[in-house]
Length: 320
Ligand code: UDP
Image (cartoon, helix red, strand yellow):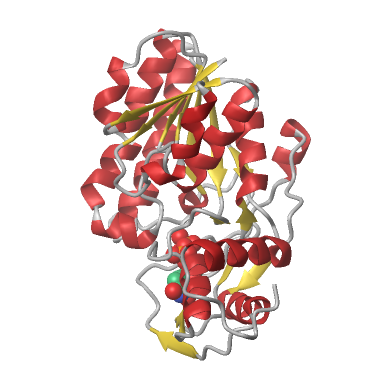
């Protein structure tokens, strides 16, 4: 098979490209390096089954030639810090980028998979969140550039399926972490790990009682590959239901890294969701998928990767 992966040089995208190349498939990775980087995929070139197209998915997808069996649209800023810094590009990636991917897939009678997000649930009033929950999103708040772009992407994807018969699927990706997250990414896991390893205070936003459910990237990518190879419409939640408070996560990172960094409390960002946990009943039933890596194990591996690649030398207490 030959797959087009937009955002393929990003955090989740690069792991997806690696898994598809690992299956023996061909991959065309489209990325403008606005948040991804060539270093994430450089090792795939040697396979002979990997092509890199550098450019914005909104503009370059029309120029993709040759066989296309699937298009997975992951291109977007995903860290709140990134999408708040590039609001218009984020709206474009979710709207025009999704449309460009759908057009390409439709023209080739290929499978299209939209990487949507748990953010479509906004600050959820239902817990845990099943796919049937319509969400609680502020359409004009700062996060709306991401949330509403993804919601529009879901609407567009659903319309292509209904109106044109395109073979589409939607996954809603919950917080994901693992190797290749950037230390300066701004999201909670890379922030806490980088801070713990360098002995700086861990920046807890608000009182730290807000929750997230974090999924190790290998588990996420297994779900994504299964979705690409299926013809399920979704939407399907992909995430690990292991729910942690931000404060609990901070203590776990300190324990696993052996760091004695203090905690530093900072203001809670506007519209920061209070609780988030996926109901993955549908993914289990329809896709036969569920996560297998616990937060302790996955965070341990991620801390090891950060210590080996990006962080300063680990302190004498490092227990991993
Ligand atoms: N957060 C935090 N400290 C940080 C970064 C984030 O306490 O240095 C909090 C943030 O306010 C949110 C949670 O961690 O409640 C997850 O934030 P992240 O940016 O990772 O992703 P989100 O789930 O909000 O998209």
